[in-house]
Image 1 (tube, rainbow, N blue to C red):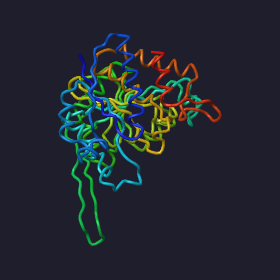
Image 2 (cartoon, rainbow, N blue to C red):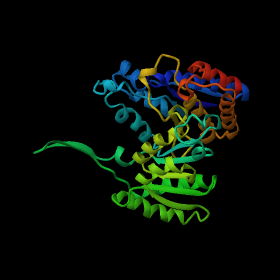
Image 3 (tube, rainbow, N blue to C red):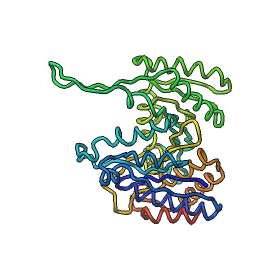
Image 4 (spheres, one colour):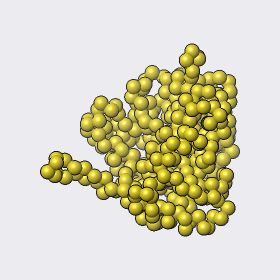
Length: 356
């Protein structure tokens, strides 16, 4: 039996996670798959009950699970200084990744045939895009030394970008391994003309590349890469990059398919344990309106079966069910053209469940 920990998240988090769970229930019935759900309090829900966004009791529950499904965490931007929401990233999201050493973050960027004309990027540019972004997730500037001090010019704040060879080597091996299963190309993205940490990345990745002679390795500065993702995204197969650059570039790449509400992510370590979550935030302004797109969360379930549970056949069936729903013309508001009929969060989840 598989034990799945569910952290529903904030605002639209429970709405879209609920639809993913319905799809998961359909999987259980269709395949007689034995999976137990454990609901775990975190973020705003945990703060209301325990006064902490990631209490130790929740961490211990996570440790007893085989895999985690997480909704987006966070509150409204206007409440950024509210104690409940002020340090969600630092006190809940980053610790979850660090505690379980989930150093590999995977984000797919695939364009959808039925949505090519919805994107703001020209159809001929995005048709056929299929990119896997491999982002280092437990080091770099998000985990480096940070602080502030008083100077003669007032407050001064700093965040330090720091990597060691071991951290780079292990994520590079993952990226080349994935490339071997795809089109055999890795593009390393950094800023080695300025950052010494990026120079180290290039040196270490070049060494790792020697063990994968079938894979083509190239390098791109992050500023050029951010342009190339829009101008010529089909040149990319596997993108390998740092924590911060990966965070920014993967959100940018989401515009190729027209909506960030379509994209899941997987955070993995050395074993099969993984944390699966949409790449977007909790969207407080649309919460409770039944308009959020649940596909990002549903596709998290697909990635879970592919990378943690060893059932790529089930993953493909979920992907096919989503594709069929698009083919049938169903759209949530974020992926609909002006004047097109739309369906809500619950209805989209139900259509995908039925197709599965």
